[in-house]
Amino acid sequence: MRIFDTNVQELKYKVLVEVAYQTWLGNDSFAVFNEIANEIVKKDEPPMSCCIYKDRAIVAERIRLALGGNKDNSNVIQVIDIACDECPKAGHTITDLCRGCIAHRCADACKLGAITFDDEQIAHIDKSKCVECGKCAKVCPYSAITDFKRPCERACKLDAISMAEDGEAQIDNDKCVACGACVYQCPFGATVDTSSIVDIINALMQSENNTKYKVYAIVAPAIASQFTYAKLGQVITAIRELGFYKVGEVALGADMVAYTEAQELIEKGFLTTSCCPAFVKYIKTRFPELEEHISHNLSPMATLGKFIKEHDKDAKVVFIGPCTSKKAEIKQDHVKDWIDYVMTFEELQAIIDSKDIIVEELPETEMDDATYFGRVFARIGGVTDAVTEAIKELGREDFEFNPLVCEGIDKCKPALMRAKKGKLPNNFIEGMICSGGCIGGAGCLTHGEANKKEVDDYGKTAAIQHIEEALEKAEEIM
Image (cartoon, rainbow, N blue to C red; front, side, top):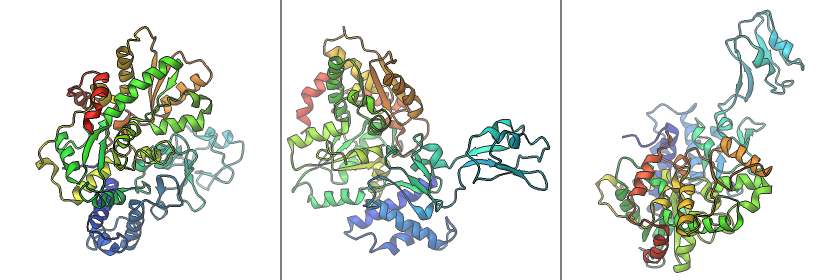
């Protein structure tokens, strides 16, 4: 059964598996580059690019990213230059639909003289004069002029990606929120999230079976929508088999956040959520006037990591989830002490397979640390549901809770603009950059329609019914 959506994901996965395998053996991946390259780029198979030599050069760059990427680049989303040379320049383009008509409405619409015609009256655009206003496209009777955008640029709703002078994509780190939308959409796999998979394996091995220090895995509730080839309890067992001391639910951290966020909302009167790091950075960079209204709560990931380390100061904590932006979040000063590494579901699959663990043959391990409300943080509207419950449990049903739920830049931007102008009637904005919420994250195994029902069904299996009860029992997980 195919686990991933695309061949690009398969290639990324193969590199991660081989790097992980060599790390378990104690080898440096670059020292055994030929072995890895021979396994991934086989001589008897057609090359993926122009030749086998370029394929192997790209593999070398993928290994570098699997080892953490360019250390001089602070962004967790980086570009493999050598893989990014196939896309034409973005902008308005004359297509084969141009019939060479004599009306020349496109030229009349262009006031800069950017459109000319050849002997057959086929239109051409002079890019040195074109300002991409699009007036020519609007008047063409054949719709022969299109506004072409590279897949990565089209995926990025923040205009953080553009074409460099040499033709490859470049990322504006100040605009980028590390959501990873470009990573999945690039058909050549030229935009990639950096990995800590080697550091995680080394942390597990150096713990000497958790005797020198304990390594905790904390798993995002979005896992309920992943690994559909096995039962969730079997996936949890597989994580334990990798050498983790304990596997905890980030949903417990979500319960903690919901409770304190409800209190903060009641106190302040207006709040935007802080669980999505990409949404938080979006507010800080594009709507700085609203920064004071961002919830002061840590994200559920950081909240649970803090809880664990306050009870075990030598512990190492690895977050496993669907989000590339979490890799950027753990670099922040107020988070870096609580979470050591982030691993996506893609990377988890690779590290499991590097150990030849057959997940569907494993016994199930129960994980029941949180409530329904903590678990549904994974899908859009889940934070709002949880805060609603927390307000109820706080006995403040007299408080008028008027939430607004938005997913994706296209829907979050209008809400934040209205809030900035003081014209938003709502007093709570739940914002998620990814479509569907966390279950639509870039680090998922598949990127089809986000299925919130799977998360809701997972939430309904929770034995703990009330948030306050989850908080009281939290000490028992240590």
